[in-house]
Length: 159
Image 1: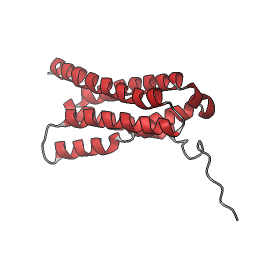
Image 2: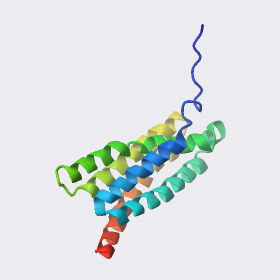
Image 3: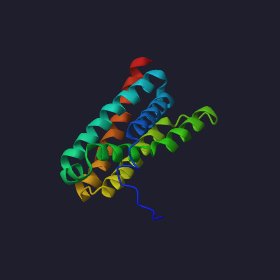
Image 4: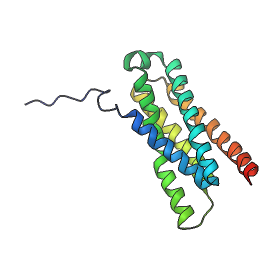
């Protein structure tokens, strides 16, 4: 009996479930940053941002898209952003147990780490050095800045 390696796409076909987990993490980070309105804001803007990042990576990495398909690019984005899970968990523990108001720090650090992980995932499917590796980092930097500014503005508006 010989063991055959699992095809790259077969082991990575749970993209939708991973996106749900990522959106739940963004909602949790939003809730820690400012309550229910920011939880809705976090998941809604996160969904838009993830879809835009998927589109940019697919357009600017045509070789990866042709060889592996759109689902592989989406899967790379989802797998990279799963790195938000420990940041959301730590933010929840810090907020609930320690009574620390550090949600912004965990959210922005998590987004930056997720950008680096997305770049690594893109390189696994043949993404280019700049457009596959650096583009997710730049996108995460802009996402972190937008998160800080917009969640701060929303917090001021709702109080």
